[in-house]
Length: 300
Ligand SMILES: *[C@@H]1O[C@H](CO)[C@@H](O)[C@H](O)[C@H]1NC(C)=O
Ligand SMILES: *[C@@H]1O[C@H](CO)[C@@H](O)[C@H](O)[C@H]1NC(C)=O
Ligand SMILES: *[C@@H]1O[C@H](CO)[C@@H](O)[C@H](O)[C@H]1NC(C)=O
Ligand SMILES: *[C@@H]1O[C@H](CO)[C@@H](O)[C@H](O)[C@H]1NC(C)=O
Image (cartoon, rainbow, N blue to C red; front, side):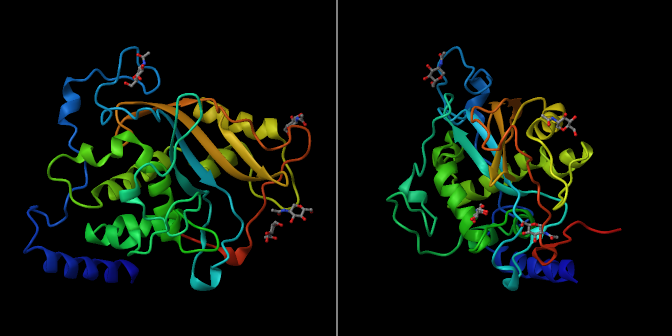
């Protein structure tokens, strides 16, 4: 039912924009123009031995790239249909730390779409970033983000906007200049959302933990070593684990990137941030409230 209505909406959109679109399939592209990178040597970010001349070709200076995820047991807007995906951690973002672990934020005021930025940044009051996704007819992307990129206590779109404006504006490979002369407004936003999802796909945290016998439970606790070893064994590096009251809430996977952040190869690296989970006390990985989650995978 949902896919039928999605398809007819897409068909309607396509027929209304086809007159103005110059692309043969009606869907405008969102990829950058990386032709200038063809003459640049490929390097792992933060491992270059000569100057990176074109920062569209490698994330610079934010070359320590973190794919971050949440484990939450509730959203606060369940009544409005904001639910967590069963059997999956959720997306937090894709962050460009500097090579030494420090970081910059909100690097481009002209691409500030966060309605609640704090940090002395002017709040955004324009249309939500979900409308940008619709401008590019990416209902597939919007559908995926609504399933896996979940906010707490506020609409999901505010969180997506926050992640773009706080972090992607500080990631050089998403600079407007990297999209060339034919840059279409918000193309970088869509390109970033696609990149976040690509990076997130590398880390099915729920499945990796379950493969080590670690599943959510309100009666059985785990220990930090067991959780760390389970993830390290499968990803090749030690991620950051975040706890609140010694219950697991976050994971951050660290990398250097060979090539661009959008399409390059991610090399996993040990965390530069110490865990906030106790190494001696039991660590909890709580089950979610049943009414806070829903099935998102296609059932056979
Ligand atoms: C790597 O590239 C950056 C950016 O161009 C430059 O600042 C840095 O000095 C380079 N590192 C080395 C070791 O050449
Ligand atoms: C952590 O749990 C594992 C698996 O149950 C166990 O073998 C190990 O002894 C525990 N380590 C600590 C420090 O409790
Ligand atoms: C942590 O535990 C304390 C004491 O049980 C409680 O008061 C506090 O609300 C908890 N914090 C969170 C974020 O759950
Ligand atoms: C498990 O505990 C968490 C944290 O206290 C709670 O939010 C959740 O509702 C509990 N889940 C179940 C299924 O009891």
